[in-house]
Length: 421
Ligand code: UD1
Image (cartoon, rainbow, N blue to C red; front, side, top):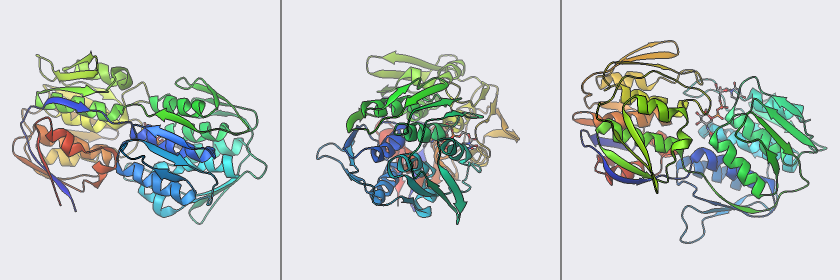
């Protein structure tokens, strides 16, 4: 199994191209199920999760291809839905597989999607997706580990108020509503930039959507959607991760295509923590401020709050900051699996429930560590880049799910990083 070896202590310098956002690409790919015409997506990142979604869509009847010479352009074409089942083996690999539920139901009138079950970062149920679809007239039953959903006479518009915002549920319902009869209103909708990006894609396909990016989204259902071309927005989590790679190594990186406004509150917390961030004509530049890194408290929140997907990386940064930082995770349970691994590298962290208290140390030390989920793994990479000596990271398939050519991008800016089989 592949592992990554890092010799730490090199300040990173240079430019890194930011890829398209994985979390925007996955729902946009699922949207191809909504029309019999081709959907052309640009800036689709070459990551394992995109491959998983592609295989699932192919099983459902979507032809997919990369036009020659355009590795990041993906054309998806679903003349007819040939199967309406998302099997356990796909959903188990990637929870975002449940994003085919809304589109399948809207286009084919039925869907059978495996329940995702538990995952490393908590139970992560899909009750909000199902309740919303029920309100739109779907009949939903759970048996044999599967969601069986039917809408024999089509979906109808409804007012859906979530008890709390969910990115995936907002996306599933927004897609389902594009082909429902009448108007759907989603209240307490998620406001993440990936929601806005999906809405742009759907509007290009002929959907009528207002309010994406606010807490209330209105969708007027259409008879049919058409093909379109859409460019996926840059990955804000990849951007934030490389911002912290610059800061933790005391280097300076220009992140080409990165956009400051997509970082939301994380941009302010990073600035407080001693990270200099400035826009450039092509993206943004990140470095460590003269005063050095300073312990800074953060609490994860839905966008525009501090992203849970940047929590582990921020914790790595705080490990070598001056003073202490209190990091509170409010979105997912059990999202501190990087803590014991960081501790093996010399970090001083105490966890109480959903809060981790990080007391900064002058240096981390390289060690063999284990990746546990996508963002936890990359926090170990950051720690390894800053640590003295060698860090060996195992189970890096987690990294490949969401970071395009991570080792190559880092090596190109000076990191001594190597992948070994
Ligand atoms: C998406 C992102 C993930 C990110 C997360 C939060 C994708 C592919 N993944 O995940 O990287 O960490 O948003 O920004 O875009 N919940 C329920 N019932 C539901 C759905 C969610 O209780 O039916 C809970 C979850 O357990 C969690 C919270 O709501 O506590 C938010 O989850 P959600 O926004 O749905 O996350 P995902 O869409 O799974």
